[in-house]
Image (cartoon, rainbow, N blue to C red; front, side, top):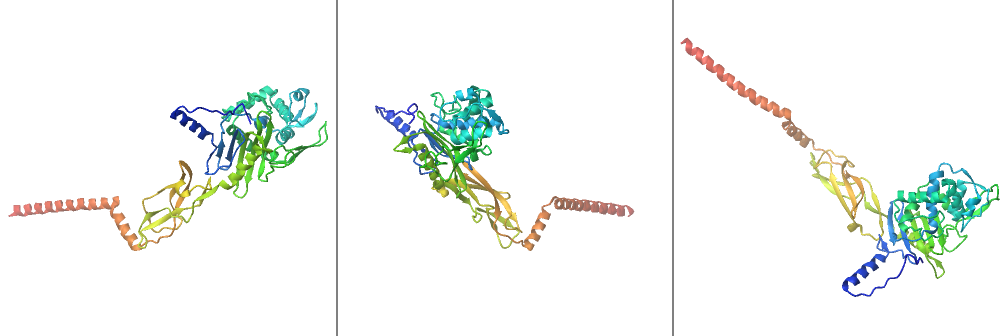
Length: 444
């Protein structure tokens, strides 16, 4: 357990206010889960669980508390190395004595003058968590480990990792080097997007081809979720990669990805500061618990069905129907906890394009849209279509045409013109009659 960032605080309750404050602090320390259940994370400093397909963090345990990163530092080292060598993985690097002199901790034990490619070094660093591979890559990429670490910190700023400070590229303990589970998850998500990254970290072993200084070597994965070579007790078939390690000061660290093939979902579990207690390594214990919990407690829930009548809209020009019902054009499922009551958690809002529809109407005609809302989050929209066809009444259509004609500008102009002509006719006729009468009176 990380004693630098965890301490037990006992306070004497002297007033009701102080007691309430303690209660709030205790509540904040309890693991927070998006679902009603809990994966049972324990014996660690920090943890979180993320779903890739929906870009959603579904579980957090003190995920923003600072702690020591351990071997997860190599995930950021991989990102920075990829920035430099991503399009030239076949670049050859010659190992120097200076590179080896900077290395401590777990190593492949490369030889001075040994020639390796960037791709080979990435495999060694990510599969076996080899510190010498990390140092060699760092110096080759940036000229020095100091400059490489500066790049790592700039990358952290770019990713918005405000709880993270790097001081080396290997994860060897340094009290000034800290991170959070939430920050580590963001680094792992960025690594997941690198083409081939998961393929590298999912290998149970990597076969390093013979070099100019050494015959072929087998490099085994240190992640016990992936390989049984170092610890056979935590192998998980659903695990597909990432990183694991430990330091005496920081405890056991894990950033692991697992695939729920049944529900077509992929999860990232991060555990930092894991204890070794009662013969169990709690980075792996908690990682497996979170995966098992996610596989059963979360999934896609149907929120729209094509048979689900949502509203109705008035129909004109039909003698057989006054309205037609509307239903979703497509089915829709939303990533939600399995124990959520859809009747209360999910709400709907819709609008129609028109206030009414004129027959004839074909079934499946788009007449509006529906929006699905989970809490305050809009989770999707879908067209609304008519559920049945409606025939037109020709008599009503004829009357409607007459009505439309009488309401038209042309009809109004014609009527007005006719009225004006009639008035003119009356006046002209009266004028001509009076003129004729006067003429006849003058002859007498």
